[in-house]
Amino acid sequence: MHFDDDIFLSYAHIDDQALAEGQKGWISTLHRALEVRLGQLLGKEPRIWRDAKLNGNDIFADGLLERLPHVGVLLSILSPRYVKSEWCQRELQAFLQVCQSAPVARLSSKSRVFKVVKTPVPLDAHPTALKPVLGYEFYIVDTHSGRARELRAPSSPDVERLYWDKLDDLAHDIADLLCALDGPGSGWCDVSSQRETVFLAETSYDLRQKRDAIKRELQEHGFKVVPEQPLPLIADELIATVREQLAASRLSVHIVGRSYGVVPDGSMMSSVVLQHQLAVERAAAGGDFCRLVWVPPDVVPDDAREQQFIESLETDSGPASGMADVLTTSLEEFKTVLHVRLTPPRREEAKTAPPAAVTEGTAHTTVYLICDQRDVDATRELQDVLFERGLEVIVQVFDGDESNIRRDYEENLRDCDVPLVYYGQGGELWLRSKLREMQKAAGYGRTQPFRAKAVYVADPDTPEKQRFRTLEALVLRRGQGSMLDAVTPLLTHLR
Image 1 (cartoon, rainbow, N blue to C red):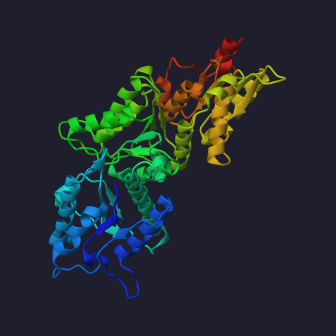
Image 2 (image 1 turned 135 degrees about the horizontal axis):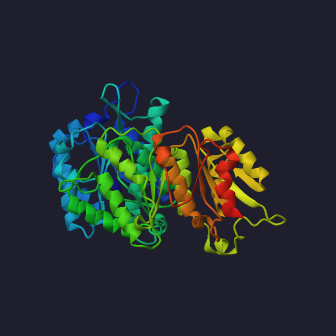
Image 3 (image 1 turned 45 degrees about the vertical axis):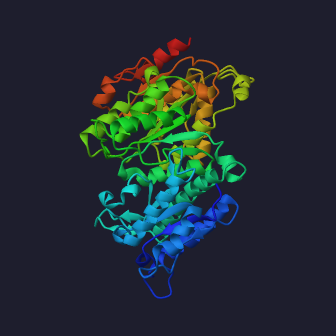
């Protein structure tokens, strides 16, 4: 479709009044920033229209109704004044009427209306047509006072960084829609329409900013991210929507926080849990699909249901669940792992990779010792005993660039004879994630089975460690004996 204007900014004029003499208004700043960023993404200058002179004395139909049929996207700047403004409501309704009579009102799940929330407004006060529209919240809530603080530029470094991040999210999504409206041959659209799809599950409010950061990272690396609109609040509709989007995705990403999240009408489970269960269902059906679950290391659940959900993830590693990686790492390390999952070794590389642990000029059995960073010094006695028995011991490294550290970790899992997990300071969830990574070593290019897999249960002693047992690996315990006594089952297995 051809439009004379790409975007029409619908806003309450009081929201563009400058707070100090000589400053630009909030809307004017957004207009200019969006114009520049969209131009960079589209490769051409976007046509953004906002009428700075319309007021209650103008005749509504004269200027606006004639121009709206030739506008691609309506951008509503939501604020308390916007929802009370009859003029703004008329702009919105007029554009929606135009869309209904146009050949394309929606593209897939995308609406031609975008919603920027400048100042918080309760959802039930939003115009009916904007309630299901994805919102871009240009504010943060102070954790101490509970008050909303608008994002603006210029501002303090932290607030301004959040402003530009949110602006970039908005620009990417508008660019996608504009090029889809333009159709094939529009340049950006030709590239974006060929991108692989990642399902990035909606999360609870406490992790929304981290989800936005992951979404931004994926988009910048050329992936299409779904869902593109808020999920329905009716359970049956949510389930149907998520199943459809998972079917088109090669990977699902789930972020688990302290809050249980919204429970859709007709369900006993939160939206977060439902999305994860549907991804388990999708993975169990087979095909080139996997899941990645991230639990930030500082998460302390504030709900018994959320605690139970996190505990259930610890045992979520069997074939029936399609197996998933559950990571308790920093955000940056998680993003590194995410990109590794999305760019696996090429099949040609996997076929030509040397057999595991076979190195030219040596036939030593190689043990890869995996541990928590806090346990590096505590592993030295174990390293010495294994080395004295003729085993080559490689210890996990933690210094250096995170992407290089991760690459070294996966290469060692690909090439070693025996992965040995030192179960010391790391928690049980951490241990389970390491066992799952052993199961997925083929994804790193490994072509041979391990000669053995082992877990050494070390101090500090806990009830969980006393009860720990697994069929996935040999369990080594020191007890009252020597370190040699503890590793004897492994040495015997390797003879």
